[in-house]
Length: 315
Image (cartoon, rainbow, N blue to C red; front, side):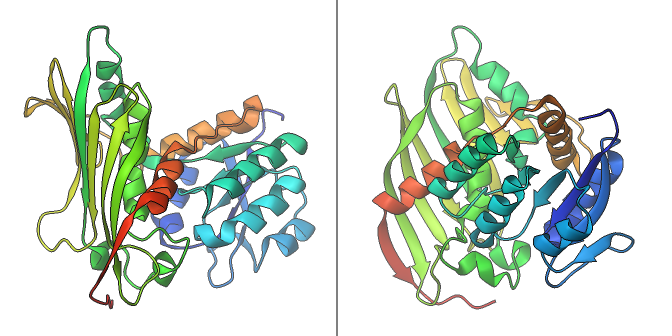
Protein backbone atom coordinates (compact mmCIF):
# COMPACT_ATOMS: atom_id res chain seq x y z
CA UNK A 1 0.00 0.00 0.00
CA UNK A 2 1.38 3.40 -0.94
CA UNK A 3 0.95 6.61 1.03
CA UNK A 4 -1.94 7.64 -1.24
CA UNK A 5 -5.52 7.60 -0.04
CA UNK A 6 -7.30 4.26 0.29
CA UNK A 7 -9.79 3.81 -2.54
CA UNK A 8 -12.91 2.90 -0.58
CA UNK A 9 -16.40 1.73 -1.55
CA UNK A 10 -19.51 1.35 0.57
CA UNK A 11 -21.89 -1.56 0.06
CA UNK A 12 -25.37 -1.03 1.48
CA UNK A 13 -26.48 2.60 1.65
CA UNK A 14 -28.91 3.14 4.50
CA UNK A 15 -29.54 5.39 7.50
CA UNK A 16 -26.39 4.45 9.42
CA UNK A 17 -24.26 5.21 6.35
CA UNK A 18 -25.74 8.67 5.95
CA UNK A 19 -25.74 9.44 9.68
CA UNK A 20 -22.29 8.12 10.62
CA UNK A 21 -20.16 6.55 7.89
CA UNK A 22 -20.26 9.39 5.36
CA UNK A 23 -19.49 12.23 7.80
CA UNK A 24 -16.62 10.22 9.28
CA UNK A 25 -15.14 9.38 5.87
CA UNK A 26 -15.43 13.02 4.82
CA UNK A 27 -13.47 14.13 7.92
CA UNK A 28 -10.70 11.59 7.31
CA UNK A 29 -7.67 12.24 5.13
CA UNK A 30 -7.14 8.50 4.68
CA UNK A 31 -9.88 7.72 2.14
CA UNK A 32 -11.14 8.46 -1.32
CA UNK A 33 -14.76 7.29 -1.51
CA UNK A 34 -14.99 6.16 -5.12
CA UNK A 35 -18.15 4.03 -5.36
CA UNK A 36 -21.23 2.58 -3.69
CA UNK A 37 -23.25 -0.56 -4.29
CA UNK A 38 -26.86 -0.63 -3.14
CA UNK A 39 -30.11 -1.96 -4.53
CA UNK A 40 -32.22 1.02 -3.54
CA UNK A 41 -30.05 4.04 -2.74
CA UNK A 42 -27.08 6.09 -3.86
CA UNK A 43 -24.87 8.94 -2.66
CA UNK A 44 -24.86 12.10 -4.72
CA UNK A 45 -21.58 12.62 -6.54
CA UNK A 46 -20.34 9.04 -6.03
CA UNK A 47 -20.44 6.32 -8.70
CA UNK A 48 -23.35 4.00 -7.91
CA UNK A 49 -23.95 0.33 -8.77
CA UNK A 50 -26.62 -2.23 -7.92
CA UNK A 51 -24.21 -4.87 -6.59
CA UNK A 52 -20.58 -5.42 -5.66
CA UNK A 53 -19.84 -7.59 -8.70
CA UNK A 54 -20.71 -4.90 -11.24
CA UNK A 55 -18.99 -2.28 -9.10
CA UNK A 56 -15.66 -4.12 -9.08
CA UNK A 57 -15.83 -4.88 -12.81
CA UNK A 58 -16.29 -1.17 -13.51
CA UNK A 59 -13.79 0.03 -10.90
CA UNK A 60 -11.07 -2.56 -10.29
CA UNK A 61 -8.95 0.07 -8.55
CA UNK A 62 -11.09 -0.25 -5.38
CA UNK A 63 -8.94 -1.43 -2.47
CA UNK A 64 -11.33 -1.66 0.47
CA UNK A 65 -15.06 -1.91 1.16
CA UNK A 66 -17.27 -1.03 4.11
CA UNK A 67 -20.18 -3.48 4.30
CA UNK A 68 -23.26 -1.87 5.85
CA UNK A 69 -26.17 -4.03 4.72
CA UNK A 70 -28.19 -6.05 7.29
CA UNK A 71 -26.21 -8.95 8.78
CA UNK A 72 -28.32 -11.67 7.12
CA UNK A 73 -27.06 -10.58 3.69
CA UNK A 74 -23.46 -9.78 4.52
CA UNK A 75 -21.63 -13.12 4.29
CA UNK A 76 -21.80 -13.67 0.53
CA UNK A 77 -20.76 -10.08 -0.21
CA UNK A 78 -17.89 -10.21 2.29
CA UNK A 79 -16.78 -13.57 0.88
CA UNK A 80 -16.71 -12.19 -2.65
CA UNK A 81 -14.79 -9.08 -1.60
CA UNK A 82 -12.15 -11.05 0.31
CA UNK A 83 -11.72 -13.47 -2.61
CA UNK A 84 -10.88 -10.44 -4.75
CA UNK A 85 -8.21 -9.47 -2.22
CA UNK A 86 -10.10 -6.44 -0.88
CA UNK A 87 -9.85 -5.31 2.73
CA UNK A 88 -13.25 -5.44 4.43
CA UNK A 89 -14.89 -3.43 7.21
CA UNK A 90 -17.94 -5.10 8.75
CA UNK A 91 -20.57 -2.90 10.39
CA UNK A 92 -21.81 -4.37 13.65
CA UNK A 93 -22.90 -7.07 14.21
CA UNK A 94 -20.29 -8.58 11.91
CA UNK A 95 -22.60 -11.34 10.70
CA UNK A 96 -25.74 -13.33 11.35
CA UNK A 97 -23.78 -16.26 12.84
CA UNK A 98 -20.46 -16.84 14.56
CA UNK A 99 -19.29 -19.53 12.14
CA UNK A 100 -19.76 -17.41 9.04
CA UNK A 101 -17.54 -14.65 10.44
CA UNK A 102 -14.93 -17.21 11.47
CA UNK A 103 -14.97 -18.47 7.87
CA UNK A 104 -14.48 -14.91 6.65
CA UNK A 105 -11.45 -14.59 8.92
CA UNK A 106 -9.96 -17.69 7.32
CA UNK A 107 -10.70 -16.36 3.83
CA UNK A 108 -8.94 -13.12 4.70
CA UNK A 109 -5.80 -15.07 5.54
CA UNK A 110 -6.03 -17.18 2.37
CA UNK A 111 -6.38 -14.17 0.08
CA UNK A 112 -3.97 -11.85 1.90
CA UNK A 113 -6.82 -9.47 2.71
CA UNK A 114 -7.72 -7.71 5.95
CA UNK A 115 -10.90 -8.02 8.00
CA UNK A 116 -12.10 -5.52 10.61
CA UNK A 117 -15.08 -6.30 12.86
CA UNK A 118 -16.30 -2.95 14.18
CA UNK A 119 -17.92 -2.28 17.56
CA UNK A 120 -18.64 1.44 17.53
CA UNK A 121 -19.80 1.72 21.16
CA UNK A 122 -16.33 0.72 22.37
CA UNK A 123 -15.18 4.09 21.10
CA UNK A 124 -17.64 6.08 23.20
CA UNK A 125 -15.92 8.91 25.04
CA UNK A 126 -15.53 7.41 28.54
CA UNK A 127 -15.03 3.72 27.73
CA UNK A 128 -11.21 3.70 27.71
CA UNK A 129 -11.08 5.45 31.09
CA UNK A 130 -13.35 2.76 32.54
CA UNK A 131 -11.11 0.06 31.12
CA UNK A 132 -8.01 1.66 32.65
CA UNK A 133 -9.71 1.94 36.04
CA UNK A 134 -10.70 -1.74 36.06
CA UNK A 135 -7.19 -2.79 34.99
CA UNK A 136 -5.54 -0.92 37.88
CA UNK A 137 -3.65 -3.09 40.36
CA UNK A 138 -5.77 -3.82 43.42
CA UNK A 139 -9.14 -3.26 41.76
CA UNK A 140 -11.41 -6.31 42.13
CA UNK A 141 -14.72 -6.72 40.35
CA UNK A 142 -17.57 -8.00 42.54
CA UNK A 143 -20.32 -8.05 39.92
CA UNK A 144 -22.01 -5.92 37.29
CA UNK A 145 -25.33 -4.92 35.74
CA UNK A 146 -26.09 -3.82 32.20
CA UNK A 147 -29.35 -2.11 31.25
CA UNK A 148 -29.87 -1.41 27.54
CA UNK A 149 -33.48 -0.28 27.22
CA UNK A 150 -34.96 1.89 24.50
CA UNK A 151 -38.01 2.60 22.36
CA UNK A 152 -37.81 0.48 19.18
CA UNK A 153 -40.30 2.69 17.36
CA UNK A 154 -38.01 5.68 17.86
CA UNK A 155 -34.71 4.07 16.85
CA UNK A 156 -35.66 1.32 14.39
CA UNK A 157 -38.86 2.36 12.60
CA UNK A 158 -39.97 0.08 9.76
CA UNK A 159 -36.74 -1.91 9.75
CA UNK A 160 -38.31 -5.27 9.02
CA UNK A 161 -34.97 -7.07 8.63
CA UNK A 162 -34.29 -6.59 12.32
CA UNK A 163 -37.29 -8.75 13.24
CA UNK A 164 -36.32 -11.64 10.98
CA UNK A 165 -34.16 -14.61 11.95
CA UNK A 166 -30.58 -13.39 12.08
CA UNK A 167 -31.63 -9.78 12.65
CA UNK A 168 -31.00 -10.09 16.44
CA UNK A 169 -34.05 -8.09 17.51
CA UNK A 170 -33.37 -6.31 20.80
CA UNK A 171 -29.75 -7.48 20.63
CA UNK A 172 -29.08 -5.22 17.66
CA UNK A 173 -28.67 -2.34 20.14
CA UNK A 174 -28.00 -4.65 23.10
CA UNK A 175 -24.85 -6.04 21.53
CA UNK A 176 -23.45 -2.50 21.76
CA UNK A 177 -23.56 -2.75 25.54
CA UNK A 178 -21.99 -6.19 25.44
CA UNK A 179 -19.22 -4.86 23.20
CA UNK A 180 -18.39 -2.29 25.90
CA UNK A 181 -18.59 -4.82 28.73
CA UNK A 182 -16.30 -7.35 27.01
CA UNK A 183 -13.84 -4.54 26.35
CA UNK A 184 -13.62 -3.02 29.83
CA UNK A 185 -13.83 -6.07 32.11
CA UNK A 186 -10.38 -7.68 32.28
CA UNK A 187 -11.65 -11.23 32.78
CA UNK A 188 -13.86 -13.31 30.51
CA UNK A 189 -17.49 -14.12 31.25
CA UNK A 190 -20.08 -16.49 29.84
CA UNK A 191 -23.85 -16.87 29.60
CA UNK A 192 -25.28 -18.82 32.53
CA UNK A 193 -29.01 -18.28 31.95
CA UNK A 194 -31.28 -16.38 29.58
CA UNK A 195 -34.93 -15.55 29.05
CA UNK A 196 -36.06 -14.14 25.71
CA UNK A 197 -39.41 -12.52 24.92
CA UNK A 198 -40.67 -12.92 21.34
CA UNK A 199 -43.65 -11.04 19.87
CA UNK A 200 -46.06 -13.62 18.51
CA UNK A 201 -45.60 -12.26 14.98
CA UNK A 202 -41.78 -11.88 14.97
CA UNK A 203 -38.78 -14.21 14.71
CA UNK A 204 -36.50 -12.07 16.88
CA UNK A 205 -36.88 -11.05 20.55
CA UNK A 206 -38.19 -7.72 21.78
CA UNK A 207 -36.70 -8.14 25.27
CA UNK A 208 -34.22 -10.31 27.13
CA UNK A 209 -32.90 -11.03 30.60
CA UNK A 210 -29.48 -12.66 30.76
CA UNK A 211 -27.36 -13.91 33.63
CA UNK A 212 -23.63 -13.98 32.96
CA UNK A 213 -20.84 -15.34 35.18
CA UNK A 214 -17.21 -14.26 35.18
CA UNK A 215 -14.42 -16.81 35.24
CA UNK A 216 -13.86 -15.95 38.92
CA UNK A 217 -17.53 -16.53 39.71
CA UNK A 218 -18.95 -13.00 39.86
CA UNK A 219 -22.49 -12.40 38.59
CA UNK A 220 -23.19 -10.03 35.69
CA UNK A 221 -26.89 -9.39 35.05
CA UNK A 222 -28.29 -7.95 31.85
CA UNK A 223 -31.69 -6.49 30.94
CA UNK A 224 -32.42 -5.54 27.33
CA UNK A 225 -35.85 -4.14 26.44
CA UNK A 226 -37.26 -2.42 23.36
CA UNK A 227 -40.63 -1.61 24.91
CA UNK A 228 -39.55 1.46 26.89
CA UNK A 229 -41.85 4.49 26.64
CA UNK A 230 -40.21 6.67 29.29
CA UNK A 231 -36.56 7.36 30.05
CA UNK A 232 -34.25 5.20 27.96
CA UNK A 233 -31.15 3.54 29.41
CA UNK A 234 -27.80 2.61 27.94
CA UNK A 235 -26.04 2.05 31.25
CA UNK A 236 -23.49 -0.28 32.85
CA UNK A 237 -22.65 -0.51 36.56
CA UNK A 238 -19.61 -2.46 37.72
CA UNK A 239 -19.27 -3.14 41.44
CA UNK A 240 -15.68 -3.12 42.66
CA UNK A 241 -13.80 -3.02 45.96
CA UNK A 242 -13.06 0.63 45.10
CA UNK A 243 -16.69 1.62 44.58
CA UNK A 244 -19.40 1.35 41.93
CA UNK A 245 -18.15 2.34 38.49
CA UNK A 246 -20.86 3.57 36.16
CA UNK A 247 -20.86 4.06 32.40
CA UNK A 248 -23.97 5.89 31.25
CA UNK A 249 -25.42 7.32 28.05
CA UNK A 250 -23.90 4.50 26.00
CA UNK A 251 -20.43 4.95 27.46
CA UNK A 252 -20.19 8.73 27.17
CA UNK A 253 -20.12 9.49 30.93
CA UNK A 254 -18.14 7.85 33.75
CA UNK A 255 -19.23 7.81 37.38
CA UNK A 256 -17.77 6.50 40.64
CA UNK A 257 -20.23 5.99 43.48
CA UNK A 258 -22.72 8.17 41.56
CA UNK A 259 -20.29 11.08 41.33
CA UNK A 260 -19.51 12.17 37.78
CA UNK A 261 -15.76 11.87 37.30
CA UNK A 262 -15.46 12.14 33.52
CA UNK A 263 -17.60 13.48 30.70
CA UNK A 264 -15.23 13.76 27.74
CA UNK A 265 -16.26 15.79 24.76
CA UNK A 266 -16.70 13.81 21.56
CA UNK A 267 -17.89 15.04 18.23
CA UNK A 268 -21.27 13.80 17.01
CA UNK A 269 -19.51 11.20 14.88
CA UNK A 270 -16.62 10.45 17.26
CA UNK A 271 -17.22 6.71 17.49
CA UNK A 272 -17.21 6.23 13.73
CA UNK A 273 -14.31 8.63 13.22
CA UNK A 274 -12.29 6.28 15.43
CA UNK A 275 -13.53 3.26 13.49
CA UNK A 276 -12.31 4.73 10.21
CA UNK A 277 -8.98 5.73 11.75
CA UNK A 278 -8.59 2.13 12.94
CA UNK A 279 -9.58 0.71 9.57
CA UNK A 280 -6.90 2.82 7.89
CA UNK A 281 -4.36 1.25 10.26
CA UNK A 282 -5.72 -2.22 9.46
CA UNK A 283 -5.31 -1.59 5.74
CA UNK A 284 -1.97 0.18 5.84
CA UNK A 285 -0.34 -2.10 8.43
CA UNK A 286 -1.70 -5.34 6.93
CA UNK A 287 -3.24 -6.61 10.19
CA UNK A 288 -6.62 -8.13 10.95
CA UNK A 289 -8.79 -6.76 13.75
CA UNK A 290 -11.36 -9.43 14.65
CA UNK A 291 -13.28 -9.77 17.92
CA UNK A 292 -16.36 -11.99 18.08
CA UNK A 293 -16.93 -12.03 21.84
CA UNK A 294 -20.10 -9.88 21.82
CA UNK A 295 -21.64 -11.97 19.02
CA UNK A 296 -20.74 -15.21 20.81
CA UNK A 297 -22.50 -14.05 23.98
CA UNK A 298 -25.66 -13.26 22.02
CA UNK A 299 -25.49 -16.62 20.22
CA UNK A 300 -25.11 -18.44 23.55
CA UNK A 301 -28.09 -16.54 24.95
CA UNK A 302 -30.21 -17.91 22.10
CA UNK A 303 -28.89 -21.43 22.81
CA UNK A 304 -29.66 -21.39 26.54
CA UNK A 305 -32.80 -19.27 26.61
CA UNK A 306 -36.18 -20.00 27.97
CA UNK A 307 -38.66 -18.35 25.62
CA UNK A 308 -41.92 -16.52 26.27
CA UNK A 309 -44.34 -15.36 23.58
CA UNK A 310 -45.70 -11.84 24.12
CA UNK A 311 -48.22 -9.70 22.27
CA UNK A 312 -47.67 -8.96 18.59
CA UNK A 313 -45.60 -5.95 17.65
CA UNK A 314 -46.62 -3.56 14.89
CA UNK A 315 -44.75 -0.42 13.81
